[in-house]
Length: 542
Image 1 (tube, rainbow, N blue to C red):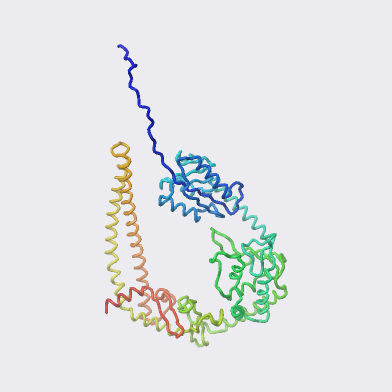
Image 2: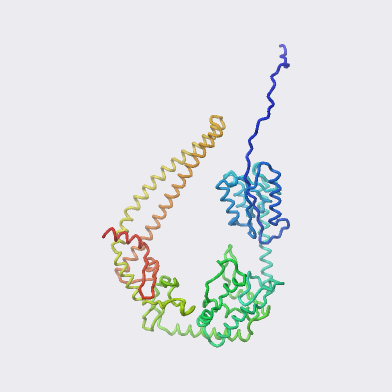
């Protein structure tokens, strides 16, 4: 066979084809831990590394910087991190850049979930500069989970070391608290040592002086409030030691504050610490037997003799109160406990017995506890509250019964309708899922263009999202309906029992009454559970 000539082969057009590349709007995420143990991890250094990387990457532009300072990497409830994820969800950013994986997070499981699952699902590119990780170049193989585990182990090791150092400081009698006790300051040259704050210490000495004279804690509170003395948290805020208003307490002294000062050995020069313990990120109280007390660690505010004298008086007063309580006739059941409030101040009202025979009153004790102008004289007899509850229950008796019967009839009907709608939604979700899968296959087979695929995919995903949201609403409404019906049944049973026997118990009151507000003219408002629904029923009957 003769060979074919190749001299006249057609020339291929070598004109370069323009390639459209994606431009990424990047978030620079920087984080500094509380321990700040590793050099080179300052916020400025992290930002410089990320900005230099972006400057060398023409397909990336910096959209915003998200900074979490003094926050642990073991949890992801960080303000800037959460804001960044919200911006990623809204489409404002589509790329996240960190210096290294440990800045993103030190919890191996959660960090792996974000990087390998959530961010790809959101269409967000992830880059860890110094770890040479880029989600566009693959999943990182074994490197990514290994680095995350190492980061988590590092965080746990640092945490253990910090706790170990803190325990040793406590044993040595060195102060480990965030803020010095009222009456003291931290030594500017050694934050683990307490020095006397003479201004606040003068108030502490006045409190101990009154107590040594036999003045009770309640009377001491009234004297301090009458004199306009700032309570500890407001005093520290005025000195600039507290900036967060959430840490500032009430504007007046309270009995527990005075009692806490009178029983604190720190004012006698002893360091008592280890009163709480952190378990699963929650502080729990520790038994006094386990407290760590180191004597004579700092200058005392009062003499040890005065401190011991006050402790003896407090023990005697407590013993007398116990004897008086044992000698008195037992109190009747406190059925309105936690339900009666002063309508003017909002404070819980205190139940008192007028005499041993049993005439009970509720009184607002703001004037006695705080100062004379704290509130009005507000009081009411317990018997009047009981009668008021019976009267109100009688008024709504028909509405209670009618509402119960109607709920009993309508709940199965509504549940059946909800079940039918859920079946229809599930069928449509299944159908939409199949359509999505076929769309992808059609695009791979060149039956539809990428633009058509994107538009149709967005429409189906929007429909799936709306259907899923509706299914969640139906399930939530069904759960709420079941819970509400159970609560209504309990309410109806309690109301019927109270009316039939003309007797109120703590359990029945808890089911029937939301709260009772007492006014200065001895009138009161009883707020029943489901009261709005009862009033609607009464209007229908009328």
